[in-house]
Image 1: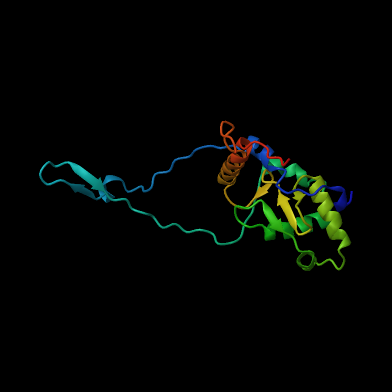
Image 2 (image 1 turned 120 degrees about the vertical axis):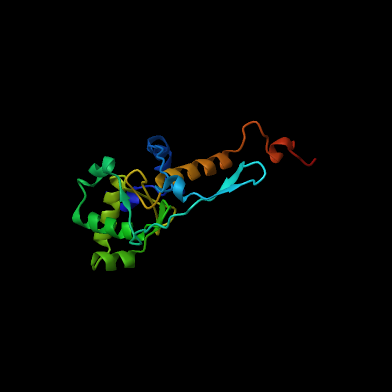
Length: 189
């Protein structure tokens, strides 16, 4: 298949499915292991009542290296990919921005990253990645959407939640009329 065989999308076509499939679980972690001995409390001197206490914030070390999560449940999407598709996928992972399902794709950068001298293997690779539902075409030749069920850079749960909020805002309240719906049509003559 050719890249032009696939339709362009204004929004990420994978997101509605992601809403159904993202597994949300809650985990709780105590802030410190020091217990009562590290807690400072304020007392009312007249009543002895506890007025409040302090909270210690622990500094943690984080890895500053760029990363993208690949989800093992969808790993079979990669089984049939060609070497050029894997190389272009590497470029795509490098271009991904945290908490975003969209990426800017620049053919000259991709050629430099993959070491290809021609654009033909890159376009064939893009078509393969789209056919495997790893990416989707965006609204112009430089924009692609990633499938967040396969890979994501950041917290997929909060990303999906923000997508749901945006979707609800666009839909509006079905009980509420638009100002323009309430105005009767106007005609001259």
